[in-house]
Each structure stands twice: as C-alpha cells, then as structure tokens.
Amino acid sequence: MTRSSASQAQPQAAPLPPPLLCVSIHDVAPATWDDCARLAAALREVADIPLSWLVVPRYHDRPADDAAMRAGLDAALARGDELVLHGLTHLDTEARAASLRQRFLRGVYTQREGEFAALSAAEARRRLALGLDWFRERGWTASGFVPPAWLMGEGAWEALGDFPFAYTTTFMHFHLLGGKGDAAMAASAAAAGSGDGAGGHIGAGASADNRLAARRSATPFGPALFAPSLVYAARNRSGRFLSPLAAGLAARWQAGAPLVRLSLHPPDVRHPRLLAHARRLVEQMVRTRHAVTKASCAAHYKPIYQPIYQPRPQNPPRQPGPQPPYGP
Ligand SMILES: [Zn+2]
Image 1 (cartoon, rainbow, N blue to C red):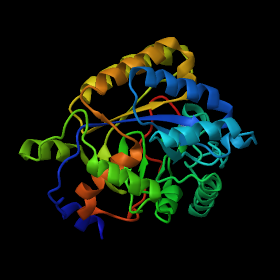
Image 2 (cartoon, helix red, strand yellow):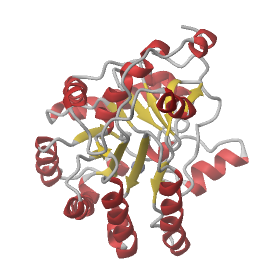
Image 3 (cartoon, rainbow, N blue to C red):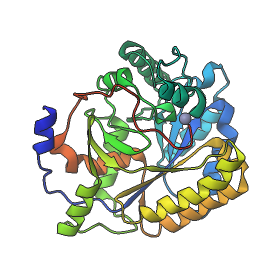
Image 4 (cartoon, rainbow, N blue to C red):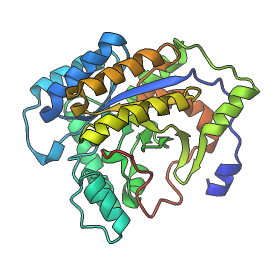
C-alpha cells in the first residue's frame, strides 16, 4: 500500500476501546532489578494493574547473573504482565553524528543511551535478532519493541519491518506495526476481546469517532496513536523539580485521550517525591481508564487501524524520530 492510498483509506467501523492507561518500567536488567521490583511493588500498593517491563538483554554490555530478575519476571508474566524488548545493550556506540542537533540529542541529551539512533539496517536487524534469541532462551516472547531513549534512525525503522512485532513506541506515538506478534499478542487479543475496562467503553458515535480521528497521526511509519508519554527526569535536581509538574499538566491535558502512557525508570524509585507523584497519578487515572499492557493496547487498536495497515515504512525518516524531553 502506498503512503497516499494509506492516507485516503477510511477506518472500518469497529467498537472503540475504553480509555486506556499503559504503565511501563524501562531499563529492566540485573543491574537495575532491585529498583525495578521496588517500583512495581510501590505501584501495586495503590493499583493492582498489569505492567509492561522493558527488558534490556545485555544492559550496558556487562555480563550479569540474571537469576533474581528471571524469577521476578516469570512471576510478573504469571500475573498478566508483559515483557518488551528494549534494545540489546542500551548503548549508542556508533560514530559521532555530523549535525550539531544529532550530536546534542545522542551525546548530551540522552547520554549515548540511544542504541538504535544511528544503526545501519543490518546492524539493527542483528541486534533485534540477538535480543529475541535471548528472550527465547528464557522461554519469553516479545510482541513489542521500544528503542532505548525512544530514538530510532532510518536503519532501525527499516529493520523493524522484518520482525513480527505488533507495535513500537516513540516518545510521542504508539505505532502499530505490520507484524502479527506472537503467542503473547494472541493472548492479549483474547483478553482485549473479553475485557471490559473499569472506565467502560467509549461509545461508537460521531463524537467518539471525532475524538479518535483527532488522535490518529499520519506518520511516515504507518498507523500511530498520538500519545506523548508522561515521564520523570530523576537525573538532576531541576528535572526532579520540574518533571512532576510537567507530568501532572500533561496528564490533565490528556484527560480525554484514548491512551495515556506513563513511563517509569529505575532511578525514579529513589526519589520519594517522584514516586509519590507517580502513585497518585496511577491511582487517579485507573478511576477512569482501563490499565493494560502495551501488547493489549495494540490488540485493542489493531481492528480499528486495520484498513491502513502498512507492514513497512515507505518513507523512513532521515533523522531519529520525536525526542523525549527528559532523556532516556
Ligand atoms: Zn531505556
């Protein structure tokens, strides 16, 4: 399907999902496991919701004993959580960018954590395959891929089309991909079909259709839902002060949105103000939203976006996509 025919196609009438909330924990690895587990426990004290764990197979390329993490993630899967592939090493080891903007984004802003920002398609393909093998060795499957620091260059977008991922996310968008996913995706699809969210379904009337249309984005990568992530900046004092304010404002601004994403990082748990803010946000949002994994979110939206489905990007970007405001 060409880009122009994709943009002319009309979505078929399908029942809209309830307003959704996806909460994810980034940078899950043996080195961060204790913080990740504390983060999940702290959230579950206020709302027993399914979580998406973004796992990095070789975090910072340091070998580590992953027994405790494996046991913890197996238990998470058993309770309905999802494991997502989040890069291979989480390190950007490619040559320095030529442009000042790219040098800033990759070197300063994300502190060279945007592993997939500048990879060739062949190298991106190799790392995705290694990551999926690593998942498979542990008996895990991944129906989604989230690039470290939400940065993906042209090569990574091209490589992504060769894998059966059902979705990927950037800072601004939730992208549905052409892949069928896997067993985890099928299970999520079944759950999406039978589930009835705490917030109830949006009606399929004109106003709901308009609301969805306003959020549908014509990105070069196929169908995507505009859903900027709420995120904290634990790295420095000003970030810790300002980011909860920004997240609170963004949450209010997105009050009527079909999907709200909250992305948490291991260091967040070490700062009581950030943790308290996240817990309060989740507690408030689950009153009106159905908390789901990202795989389940993709399963909810797949029937709605089916007519403009596009397995591979026709016009991949020349530069990495939308940038997070607070780094990885
Ligand atoms: Zn990350």
